[in-house]
Length: 290
Image (tube, rainbow, N blue to C red; front, side, top):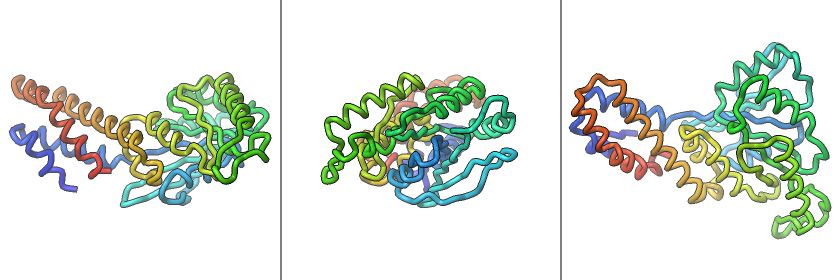
C-alpha cells in the first residue's frame, strides 16, 4: 500500500532521512505477523476455539522440534497477512529437571506475543496445568501478563443438561458453577488478565474473548490479530483497542527516530510538535491498513 499520499503531507517538510525511516518502520508495523502460543491438555478444544474466532481455519505448517519434544506450528493467512499459532507441549508431562523442555521454551518463548491457556471448564483439577504454568513463569521467566486463561466447553459444566440449546446460554445453576470455576482458576494461577469463560462449539461469549484477547496482546500485535478475527467478533471495542495500540506504536516510532537521527535540534523539536498530528492521521487510516 502506498502510504505517501495520506501521510506524506503531514511530514512533507521533514528531511528525507526521517521520512524514509518513518515509512519503513510504519510498513513493518502494518505487516507485523503476530505469533500466539497455545497451552492446555489434549481435548481442551484449542483448535476448535481458534477456528471459531478467526476467519480462516488453522493450517499445519511444521513441527518445531526440541530434541524429542515437539511444538506444532499452525498459520492463518488472509490477504497475504499471516497469523501464527504454536501449540506448545508440556501440560501433563514431567517438566522438572527436563533440559529438553528448557531448551524448547528458551527458543520459542521470545517469539510469542501471548499464550492462550485453554482449560476444560468441566475438569475437576488442573494440577498438571498449574505445574506447567509455574515452570514457564518461575523456571523460564515468562511474564504472567503474557498469558490469557480461557475456560472452554462451558456447555459441559454440570448440570450440562440444563444448557439452553436455543439461546446457547447456560442455566442459572450452570452460571453459578462457572463462576466457581473462574474463581478456582484465579486462585490457582493468579492470572494478570481476566479469566474468560466460553464455549467454542456453542459460540458462547466469544465476542468477550475476542475483545479481551486484543487488550491482552502487545501493542504491535493487536492490529494484526484483529484483522484476522471473524467479522462478528471484530467489534467496535476490538477496533478501538487495536487502533489506539497502533497509534501508540506510531508515536513510539516518531520518538525513536527523533532520538536516533542526527538532525538539528530545531527540526527535532518541530517533529515533536507535530507528532500528535502524525499519530492522528495514522489512526484515521487504520481501517485501510487493517
